[in-house]
Each structure stands twice: as C-alpha cells, then as structure tokens.
Image (cartoon, rainbow, N blue to C red; front, side, top):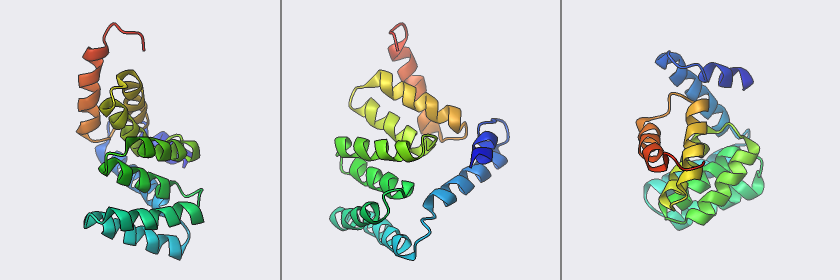
Length: 157
C-alpha cells in the first residue's frame, strides 16, 4: 500500500494515477469475506433503489461483523450523507480515517460535509489533504478548494 500511495502522490501521469486509484479502491473493497462481500453488494443495490433503511441494515451488519473493514464504514458514511445525516456521516468518516488516514475519498467526503455545515477552515484542510494524497481526484474537490480559498483568504487556518 505504501508504494501505491507513493506512486499516486506523483502528479503528471493520468493513466498511472487512475490505475493506482483503481488498485487502492479494489484493495479497500476486498473484505476477505464472502459474507461481507454479499452484504456490501446488497447494500449497493439497496442504495441504488433508494431503499436506505435496508441499506443501513446491511451496512450495520458489515461494520459489526468486521469493524476493521474500511469500506464498510466508508459506504455507511456515504449512506448517511445521502440522507443529510451529517453527524453520523462524520462519525463514520472518523472511523475510516482512523483505520486508513490516507483514504482520500473519506477526506474528500469529510471536506464536503464540513463545507456544507459551514466549518470552512476545516473543510479546506481536509480537501487539500485529499488532493495532496491523490492529485487525480475529480474536479469537484478542486472546485471546492478554489471556492473556499478566497473565502478564507486572510483568515488564520
């Protein structure tokens, strides 16, 4: 993983960057458990059909059965975000980042939520950290940084 993150942090080669992102995300999704994989699949299907209570049941089972599985917490944080339950999303993102501090997706999500709840200084820090880890993140992160920087210009961060 360290080598993948080292390669990812080097901007300039989009093809390599995207390939490394894919490999990291594949590893994060790999729970090593057929049961967890099935629950995650069901959760994904439930989210796609907006059956959020069912998705939450599956993701609660995942986080209970395998509390060290980063993607279970991350997916549940996403589910909470979709329901505007920012406090719960932040709590799960905290667990993701405790397990994998370099989880650029969780950092980006954290930044977006903090921005949404008007904690702009912290949002900017999280978004910049995400971009530092993964300079190939989508434009939504860059756009948020470009918007926040002038707002905070001159303020102590």
